[in-house]
Length: 493
Image (tube, rainbow, N blue to C red):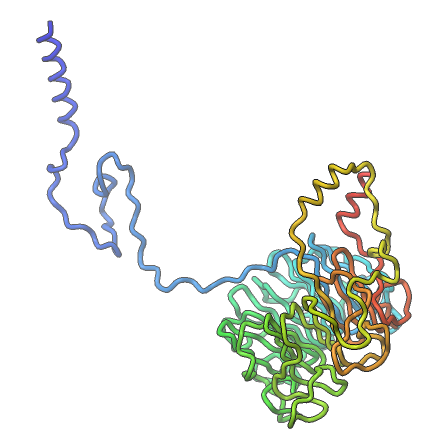
């Protein structure tokens, strides 16, 4: 019996083994070139029989693709124009207030003209934006898809829709896609794409579009710069930083805002980008009115118009009314710089006392500590001590305490220090708790705080959104903004 079983097992083993090719059966082959796989190779040629389908060797793809910059992350943010302002919510809603002379508030029912205004914030219908930016008299929204829509003043083609008409409702900027950053001037706009190319459109009488001409453009044209990583726009000039750290400016140069040591018209204007010497570093850019700035962890450097001490510096050998080359205006870390018509403000970590006239950074708002965006902060009902402690523990680590400093012209209270005196050195904005972001209009300023917005200065067009048209020498709460967390608390009651 044992012999029969052994014979049967031997037969089965020989039958199974005969159907599987042995490793030495195939004729020997040379290994294929890794850069050119054998087109005739079958699955059995690629490896051991039981290894499954072979992975093809990658073909030579050439140089790696260029970097693509992402859209900015969703966040609450400010955008200030000449006499109006907008606020973009983290969820994409956009609210605007102030002058609506050219339709820049985005409300077709409001009407146009010098008397058209809103003294409280109102939401722009049909707009969801990753970022909103404001020019002097127009605004643009950057959508989630990388497209751009604009509204407001359009006489120079700055809305980018191929027309020269004012618009009270948003219109699409033609030919733009994959945009990740916007910068708007008085009559022009610029857009930086994910591929780090720069395109500008609109008014070009001083070469502010950077295309080598002074012809207005109704649709975007390409600025001849490579690897653009930041862009800023002033009244009629533009600046950009490239990946190698160099800063370039072009356009109007009446006040030395191009930073190349010259000024004047028409010879001083530049229709093509010119390098700014002395600021080659990974600095952020700001521009406004007739000046430009670069800022970062080491301080802030500015150049351009200085007739009201708005740049805080009068370097030896420079004219009294202008700074023609970058001058350091602040030492130490700077989080943001905002340039108004003839004043400048910056956001920095608190580091000691500011100049005379400064108010305490921890002072309460004059509208009351409870006031946030026109309504008292709701007190949650039914929240026990344990729940409150748990919520406290869940909070993110506190950010460094910040403060806003301003300098320059102050006849409308745009420095926010409680006075109307011109200041030649930095003064702290009064009664502003926990500022997180900064903006400057022609003669007013705003700051985003931990929860809400405060504005100060000129208010003739309602640009402070406090329900009045009185100028304010210290910050007041913006009325009319609605935050989702407020809505959630109300719904829970």
